[in-house]
Image (cartoon, rainbow over all chains, first blue to last red):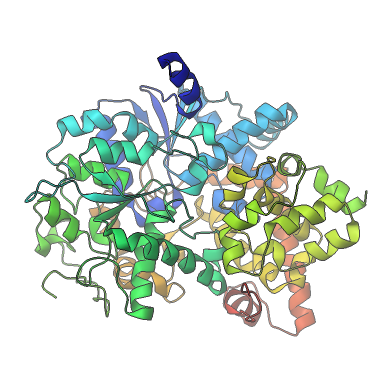
Amino acid sequence: MKKEGKEYIWKDYQKEIAEDKYFYVRSCVRQNFFPGSEWAFQKILREELKKDLFENAAHTSCTGIGYHTEIVPFETMMTVVARQFALMTEAGYEHFVSSCITSFGIYSEILETWEHFPETEARAHQYLKEATGRDFIKPKNLAHTGDIIYKFRKEIVAKGKYRLVHHQTGEPLKIVEHIGCHYSKMFPHRGIGGAEYPYVLVGMIEDWGGKVVDYPERRHCCGFGFRQYIVRANRGYSIACSRKKFESMEPYHPDAILTNCPGCPMFLDRWQYAISEMEGKTYGENGHGIPVLTYEELAGLVLGYDPWDLGLQVHQVPVEPLLDKIGIPYDPSKKFLGKDGRDLGRPEAPHFLKFYKES
Amino acid sequence: MGKLYDRLAEDVRFQEGLKSCINCGTCTAICPAAEFYNYQPRNIAVILQSRDDEQIETLLKSESIWYCGECMSCKTRCPRGNAPGLLITVLRSVSQDLGYFTESEKGRQQLAIKRTIGDWILKHGYCLYPSGILPDAHPEQGPIWEWEFSHIDDVMDRLGANLNRPGTGVLRRIPQESIDEIKKIFDVTGGTKRFELIEQFSREKAEEMGMELDETNENEYFNYIYTTDNGQHLAP
């Protein structure tokens, strides 16, 4: 096939990502469960890549979890989104970057709705004006924070101290990549590689020296399901989805799972613990779990950041087996210390899942 | 064409989500909820396509519309561009506005979601907030969350957060003026009205069931809807 033909066929799977000057909005789930990832994103963008990343303290939740549990109406969510865009407009930015995949899906849904139903955009202006006196201009570029790390993945590894290879054998590490459903299942053209060939995490893994694991349930949902996790009576749905994925990936002996969504790493981490308590089953080597990382955590490790600065101590599935394979040094005695070395005690060890190195 | 169908069809998500279902079952094959629950997303599209208000009312009062996890895998795979997951968002919205949601066990759970996620949005500006993620209610979060929860200020400080303090950063205290703006948006766009309806219809159902329901999250009705599973929901 001619080069032009190939380029034409694949153009729908490309995504334009702005080069600089980003207006940044945070993720509710990540702030609670992976605060170190958002810290790392800002550090990488500002200190390593010298980019302009602006955060306004007045931004809020997009209400996405409320919207996808239907307690928040469409028009309400739409107007909250319009307010976020207004904050961007007022700050003089045009490139909107969301730390959350649910939010990224929400922003995509609203921009698509405004395109297909222009009267809804007119209503958003009207509602926002009435409620807040603000107005907005739509972003010129919408990206997820994972898109930004993907865009600069080669710069990151060029500055990096470590690669995703076994430090003793030189073999590439085997990494499972898990894409959050709302990244590209709803609006494929808004994600790198679309819904069929999502490349955002694969690009990082391959350029950082690792090898991607393909397995049957690669695209299955982690099981968040919004109301299916939030309400205690429904959590069987959530753990069943994650378990299906673990059982499917287990024969391939992955060294780690990499995710681009806020909820997915939490569920894939916590449900490994819950399954171990319920069934005595662990999915890693010798009683360990499979470490689950966010893309900022992995980028931070590649760049040589201290694992405890990245927040890897708040994972229920310990990441030490992965650190040992890459050859990243760490101090176990500092894992659970607070700021300035304050003693915070230590979490209890699970019954089956190996947690402390000495145990 | 019936009145309920007309009401559903007003929603742009309904117009986007239902083109012409050929009942091929692709959505059902890919659906995580169909694998777990006694649920078939294709039935949702088929019933709505019938435009039969009697069937639609039964659907709005049923357990079926609460099984979907909104992963939207159906949107990717439907060969005709339908999205049952999107139709579910409209059905649930109308079910709440008409008070039909309290007719099903899964539907009644909406009060618990409103009183957690919904109230946190209006109080803190976040869908989740650490003080609300109680280890006792979340045993799956494991000993790591129990430890973190017990030392939340110290752990968040260690990880560069700005918990409950002014300024930018992780879990910062969102300015009161911003919280007020979000509340005003809820007032203007129907969010406040929906919250009130969820509360009102839930109170009526609690009374009908003879259960105590006060304004806290520690009462008979709240505990019942949050934890009860009648064992009739799973896929055969």
